[in-house]
Length: 327
Image 1: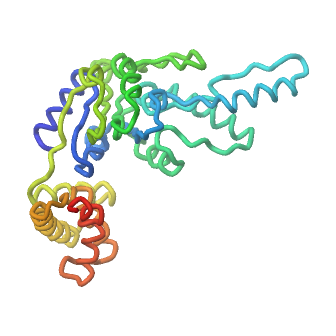
Image 2: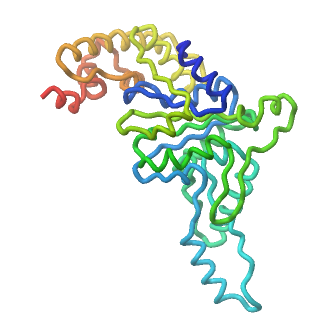
């Protein structure tokens, strides 16, 4: 991690403020949060923002349709008046809830899951990850990690309506919120040991928010963030270092010498392509595209001097939309 980015993370942790990370698409902004979580041994959660995202989606999601259907069914089935309804059974905790209060989030998530199974509805698409497979990966990731510390990634917040960052001001500042539909107040859970408690409730969670700056964010939101820029790697050595970290994370083992040679060859080639792209007025390939080329070459056993390399380069580094920018 570059020293300036390391300092930004430290300041965000010390102040309890979210870290807003700016940078071009593909510059590696989204990889900072899981990297910090892995290095610190903290739990990790993520949410990718879309144009349909609401601020509450990062806190909780309430299934009002299922709640109404169950209430109507209960009225028809009740023999001696309506049965009591547990509102938690219609609530799905979001990533900030899991970060602040994992025990209550787990309790509510289990009630939700059980209620859906009783109605033969199948598991709900969870707020934290978006797919069942992803959530299983998050669960495996968080095993044996510090239970009272967490990193949350809120990715590409500039895609959302301005009401979203404004709606997150209080939960991010106070580290608590109240579920409107149930009245349940979610607060940071006390730590089980003195070492964790000495950090204070606001310093046990790091929220990293990324933006491609496609839309201006509200000033009130910016004032409450630690703001940093994701530096673009400019040397082959920096690119190889990034590749090694990604190989380590995905393979769970040290990369082979063949992997290192491939990463070096691709890094050298990327710098050549970037220089040519700048001369031709084409957007240069990003770090993400470098990693795409790395994984593709590794899987397909393609080397830079391979006859297939030129075609793969056009698929991963020099793309049709890049060419369109030139015209």
